[in-house]
Image 1 (cartoon, protein in one colour):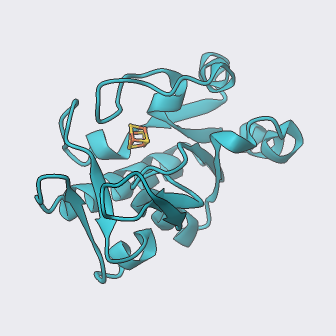
Image 2 (tube, helix red, strand yellow):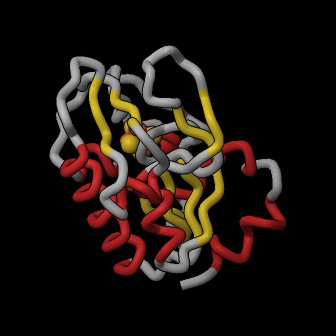
Amino acid sequence: MILVSACLAGLRTRYDGGDNLQEKVLQWVREGKAVLACPEQLGGLSTPRLPAEIVGGSGEDVLDGKARVMDMEGNDVTDAFLKGAEETLRIARMYGCKGAVLKESSPSCGSTLTYDGTFSRHKIPGQGVTAALLRRNGVEVFSEKDLSEENKLQPFLNSR
Ligand code: SF4
């Protein structure tokens, strides 16, 4: 069983009420090989919601209390992002997920890139809060860019 970002399975969980459907991810859900989660909804945020970015560091820094997550009107939404990450980890443990495919560049789900905290659409190397927490707890995190690499992901689809 692999954990996937809910928006990649076609749920309209994005901040703007849209989705990021990837047919392969939806197929895994239908086949019972994937469990989906949206950390930001699990953290209690509404949909649609204001876009948010990590300010002053990376997802790891947020976990360590060294950076915050702010929405574009300046509201501090760090606690919701931390709660969502923790709930997503609970789901991964519940289903025995050893791997995850998460939406790239999100402040929660990004695994190699996030926005730089200036709301100027500029991306920097780094990971989101949920991706960082999952990795700290032994879950391998991939993004939709890895979906073509079936061999790499197959062991996680079949593990329990
Ligand atoms: Fe998708 Fe993750 Fe954003 Fe939820 S938090 S909409 S699952 S990228």
